[in-house]
Amino acid sequence: MRTVLAVDVGGTKLAAGVVTVDGAVLARAEVATPATLDPEVLTKALMELAREVTSSGPAPTAVGIGSAGPLDPAAGTVSPVNIPAWRDYPIVETLSEIAPHTPTVLAGDGHCMALAEHWRTHHHSRALLGMVVSTGVGGGLVLDGRLHLGPSGNAGHIGHIVVDLNGPPCACGGRGCVEACASGPAMVRWADAHGWPTTDARALARDAANGHETATRAFRRAAGALAAAIVSTAALVDLDDVVIGGGVADAGEVIFAPLRAAVGELAGLPFVRRVRIHASQLGRDAGLLGAAALAFDALPGSRRQA
Ligand SMILES: [Zn+2]
Figure 1 (cartoon, rainbow, N blue to C red):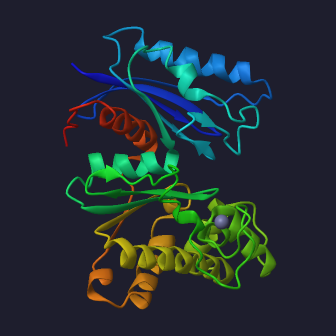
Figure 2 (tube, rainbow, N blue to C red):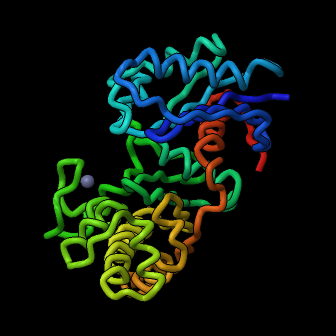
């Protein structure tokens, strides 16, 4: 059976898995991302994971890597914000040792989430936007079954759509981005500035679920920013589906109820209003499955099975 090695690189964990063409994860392993400034310590952890999952079974036919950004897919390098030891780290070259002479491909973690959601849950969607709303806001666009990467490999950066012309500065250097309004830390900062200091977005979600007004307003404001981005994207590419995952999305109806309401208010044209909004159902496997989809798509003539 044809399998690929999928690797998911994040600031919290490193994961690797062997995945079949119909999306079954045959082997998986993960480890907390070592807190180190030594790139070799990270490399060793990554390679041990990859060897562990590939040690039994046939050699993988391709390798797919999803990573926290920034990254340079053309150069095959990553510089994840939350992994300071890796700057322009040649992850493609490193991992290609595991399966020499096979395609080894790299994309952003948001890209992989969108691909995974399309592959495993919403295969019939012609235009799908995946969003990861967490410490930052990431995402990816799948159009006609293919990940839309753009010339630099960065298309689909939904977190940096501008939704507030007078909005707060964003970590990207811009201003008024979705991420600056709707990420977990952005919500916590807003609540704090409005007289409701809290420890993190999870606590803020509990407060909102219990009906506290400032916490509820913080979620309503974040939902408005997400809705503006969704409606704008729907107008641009004629979206069928939006799938939202990440820690903030785990807040459930606390975020999804005001989000649906805001989309209803902001969207006008019938083709924009028809966009469907879903919570991610894949959970922790989204990164691995998306990296696997990326790897299969790099194989000539490969057909992933829905
Ligand atoms: Zn930004």
